[in-house]
Length: 72
Image (cartoon, rainbow, N blue to C red; front, side):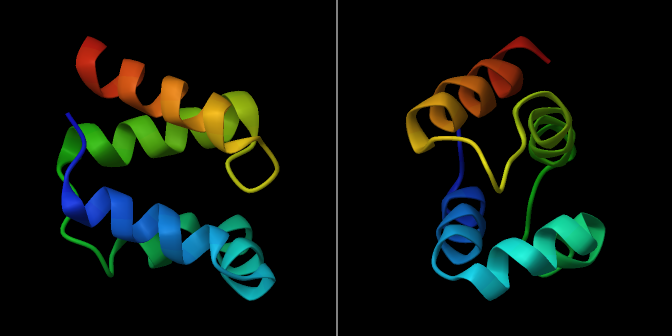
């Protein structure tokens, strides 16, 4: 189950090109601004590695992040 923090972070990343570039350059720094659980951080990093968080489609991301959180 995703939290409001995870939703807010993804919204901020996809809200602008600057957000995408900042996450791509330093995901740890961006994630540190949100109250993410350890499972959410792992899911985000794994998803970024597998599908390219800042370049993937939103439907692919929604499925991949939710699955990763539920399976951890």
